[in-house]
Image (cartoon, rainbow, N blue to C red):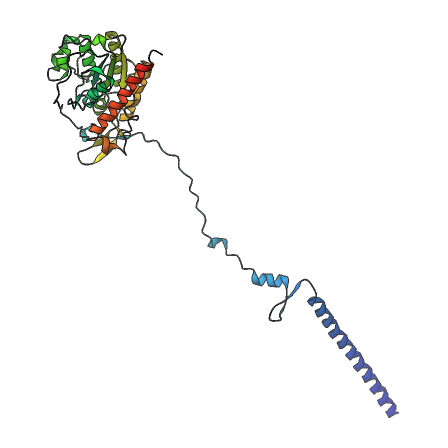
Length: 359
């Protein structure tokens, strides 16, 4: 009986052992099959060291982690600002040292007609008045045009009358352009020009202004220096404004010589100094009424409205901040090269008009 029980127990233990072996063996086989399946999968990569990795895991290891956005230097985009147009720097005109020039006369001015085909009469300030020695603008212009020339320019004068000048002819004292024009008309005494070269021309009975072919009128720089108003809204012929004086001159000169051509010449480019430092130029310095370039604009406006020829001496001569050292002596007056440049430009305009005026 006891042996029979032992036999059954041994048989039972053997069965349990068999089942256990089968279970663990199948599990190991399953793991092995699973590993084989993973190794053959497209999702598995075996590294050089024999390590088995899934693609996604490898990509996480080799893909660099992007830096935080806060570590990036932001790109700065600067929008260009719209260029500002300066209105001019208001300057106390008393600070500006106005350069003066004396007449340089080594050759006798022409005061007698030479019988040439053209007659040119020049009215202006020191730009035309100085260098009466064969190197001045009027002489060089007339030489190229083969013309008789009378130079009535007076240095330091304005186109307009001074505010304190009386308007009555009997009390006339103004040597401005208005005064020169009235003398040409024969309406005032020429005694007020006793210290000027123009008086000899006025007093010469052989000079006939009615035979003039071209009146060349150049003013504006001294009007700027003296803060002459540009124009008047109430009176277009206000002789104490720059525009009013120019309008008056064109009307009066046409009455003297109906067939004459009038050329209005604007101020030329200029630079202004206080004696030591440059304050600015004709584009920037404002006298309270405007810049020198504003006077250029008024001269052009009058020339257009009065149907005269116009020489833009400010822009057409090629004198500016880059060439000022070559063409300007003191910021305002012209060097020999500058005077030649001006005369060449003016003569070219006159000769061209002569060729085309009857076409």
